[in-house]
Length: 265
Image (cartoon, rainbow, N blue to C red; front, side):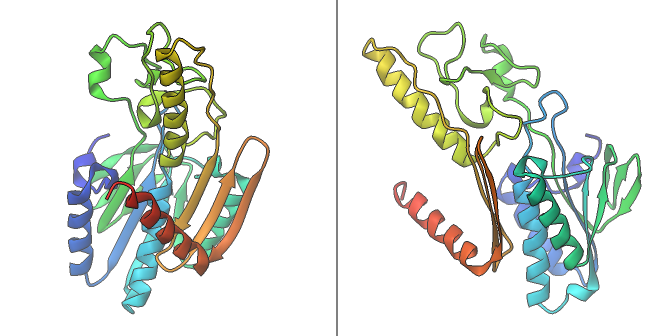
């Protein structure tokens, strides 16, 4: 997207987020814009959760620093109902939180690009001092020449058992894969874990000459962390559950992080 190099894309890594943090600390006030988009060729390939967390987390941070009144926060998205994959109730709750904390919204307008101090949309420009945006995801560049089958969005195709069609003993999981599931199936670490477990079981079965027919569970678990509280969203094919913003969910997310990383440390 034109001007994408002018803004912070947080999932690029530590460096852009550190640069954003330093610039925010140096500002005496201004407008902070936060948004995300999707891949039109593969709408499932989006990641809005981190942007919601930065939005609400920075709101909390500025309040703790007693300088929230010096900033205007704006959330923008080309989708009229951003975060819809979390469920209709979650979208309403998130937008209500934005209204409650005086966060302006600019929704339903197609993106045109960015410049240093503006977000350009078909519904008008947003003047901003700092912009954070998560673009729609695409497949890895190397996959184009891999010889593996790709989806329209550039992701490696897989079936319900995480097998790559036409290639024996090759499996795909996580963000790099295009796997069958409901339209709300997330590109999320938890979903990648579930797919990886399935792929491992099927790979071992294949190596031993058994049918590789294990399927993965489709499940969305998300705690939108606001720095001191959290909102829990859970979804599977049968039900959707939304828990209000509570301090206990912030603690739960910290505990999960510690326990998850313990095995690798």
